[in-house]
Amino acid sequence: MKSLEYKNYFFVGIGGIGMSALAKYLHYYKKNILGYDKVQTNLTKKLVNSGIGVSYTLKESMSDLIRLNPKNTIIIYTPAISNDNKILEYCYDKKFTVIKRAKFLSEIVNNGYCIAISGTHGKTTISSILSHILFQFNLEFTSFVGGIMNDYGSNLIVNGNKFFIVEADEFDKSFLELKPNMICINNIDSDHLDIYENYQNLKNTFKAFTGNLKRDGIIFHNENLEFGGYKYGLSDKSDYYIDELFHGPFETDFEIKSEKNNFGKVVFGMPGKHNALNALAAFSIAVKLNLNPKKIINAIESFSGIERRFSIITKSPKILIDDYAHHPNEIKSIVDSVKIMYPKKSNLVIFQPHLFSRTKDFMIEFARALEKFDKIFLLNIYPAREKPIPGIDSTKLLKIIENDNKKIINDGELIENLEIDDSDIIITLGAGDISEKVESIKKLILQNAI
Figure (cartoon, rainbow, N blue to C red):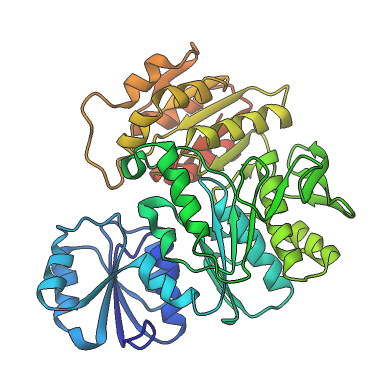
């Protein structure tokens, strides 16, 4: 059976950002969607409210699966789910068709004009901006995005199937399933070393990914990389570049140029140099789709951002910034932007490390990035899919941070520590459940309690 010919779709790990987008896509096409996740979140609540069935226990999931016919049901899972998962074991035993999300998604997007956004950082921002541009031009497209776009309240836009925008995830080498017409490579930094072992293997896999490009396909990449195709960046030697970059307190202004054209000024609501470059990447792709440059800029300026991507939650009496950053280079981009935007304001970062393996692999790099903040509150490591690694914890990280204004904060201590803190800016960073603490911090600030 082809991907859209099944009657029933069961997602193991349906609450993931990528899985939930795919579930919503199939639900849009009137498929029967069920799924399991170990915790209830805002994402799973929205799925349930839309009519998708979600179970949170093994017993409930088994009850759902017993009622499904293996002949017209497909089971979709992510690499974050281990092969000894009881649900998957049951599905294999009962002869269900079982497939990884990346493989299933590729069967959908490879049938259209596929625009694959890749790179260690920035995929979600570029994909979201490009999706917003195409929506403003009313093109027939579907986009699967790894974050919640503020303009749409969703990680999915379905507006037709001529074009597909998809994040090409390097984790578990998932992006090798894609056969794109356009590839964007935003950056390549060491990460997922549990998969790749070293940077060279990671880079080689990106190179292999470019080999999947369809005939007459186009590559876009950051000027610091060498992959052929079109370069974008800050240098006037790039095909598309940023000039006259200015950092305001809540936005970034810049001009987009090429060798022959000054496309005009952009006033962009997502602060930071890294976000200006993300916007430039989306602009470069849109121009090659033969869209009007002036209207592209208008679309970029109307883009209102993504949840947890340099999201300015409060502006007064204190500035609260929330971001998904969970890699040392992402943290460095955040602290550099904060210091440029607010040079006279004191700052405090609350960071939750994500994964024991990532913390182990980049312990020194995390320390060097974090110590640039004025003050550091360090939460315990969020394990996600991993089991603890002996000797790897936030206390070890704290010891090598060369900044005297640092401390470990347990969950129950965060608010009481913030109540007595006098920092002008508070920044929450991490890919774990730190996002669930933002609302209480916001409330504290708006009540003038801190």
